[in-house]
Image (cartoon, rainbow, N blue to C red):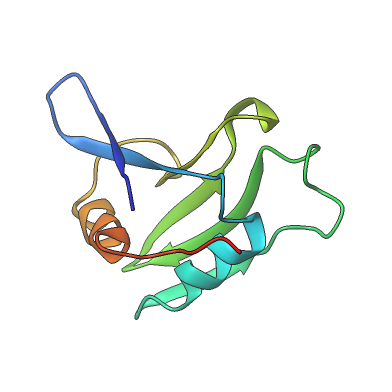
Length: 105
């Protein structure tokens, strides 16, 4: 899977994006929940496709993260810490998506 790193002014990873062309919001939530140590605290609403920018909130290693679709109609999902900023756990989350194969039918 293609991953787009978002770096802060110091060049440190603070968030990453993945394409949303073949992954739904619910599918992304399922992928996140399959990562050991991730606890989903807010799931996407059924009719939230275009209404809710931040659609998933979860905790991992004591940090709070969100998955969102910037502007509600972006071509990528953003996964980052809430509040925004660098933490070492974001790199661990990113690694879970490296090599992930998602197939469209």
